[in-house]
Image (tube, rainbow, N blue to C red; front, side):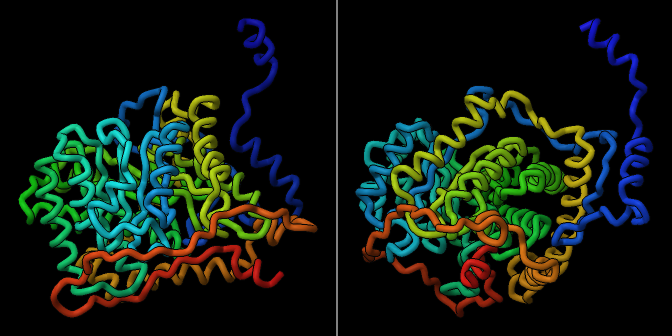
Length: 476
């Protein structure tokens, strides 16, 4: 150590001005400012950053260094029996929890339409040890009761009901009955289940619908925070204390291949969560479920998606996600095979158990770039959140088209910047696409209770999901 220090003493300290001088020498007559690049939302990316004066202000949570985040495996095969086998294999293969995607039609998830159907999916799963989360759209309250029945009133059951009608409304552009009534239903069912299951999270305040529609990081975060406020108000009206209402909400965010943006976004989420809950007199830390981006995946040369998913997992882990749902590299083509599911699990396990990403809490703290980007995303998201609240809340902002307008601005800016560099599609495409195996089961619809509530349907401009590579793949 002394020898190293002595050797370094021969070198003068390097200042930011010295670095800038070297950069300007290579630029010749071009100004230094020409190296600045904005994000699609217009947030500035500087070519050079100095160490941050102070890290972003948000409370750090204690993490288990052996299992710093929850490896959550999604199950969406339409056959409940097959979904059960997939879920058990995931849990035996290193996953800590499962996410059951429910769709009675069997087109986009497991064909579940009753408590008995869900019980078949969860057969053999010990709910006191392996948390189970749901993704059921407008059927969320009914699916929550089905999951509650499967847990048999065990107070130690680890459940994430994840009711989230606001995302379903934004994605589809319509609701079966007034969307306000769906919030009341969520809050009523949630307040009842909260008494039986003290460890359960009730709702998911997710901004992923903005991300998947092509929106920016600040817009996604603003949507998630506004959704959390809307759900908290509904839960309080249903009888939960303010602190418990926020404590039963999880934030849902997307993890993208741009891992710096993912890290900064998750850190900014904790900053805004602390600000909102503090203003409401609550003192509960943010819990974040990150899901890998679907819009970043390519159908052409799909093997490259493994690298994108690894980058997304890295960003979510370093950013402090509490749970991570990492998709399969074949998701842009079809349902994953056992091989693809294993790759998804093992990517997280390598990062966790071999790369030791969870050994340090908030490892990006102090980085000039990450701290600046965290602050910029947080400020931009806060401004959009305030605009949503000024409109009358998220439902009113969706109905007025405010959220859709912000998403379209980002999509327009991205299109104006020219074709994106997507490895395997617009950059370095393969001479011959290597075949990828996927599952293509036939949908098997089941009867399910209607999600319709009395009253006129809600309407808003739909935030339809996109894949950034799709148009360029079609042009090949």
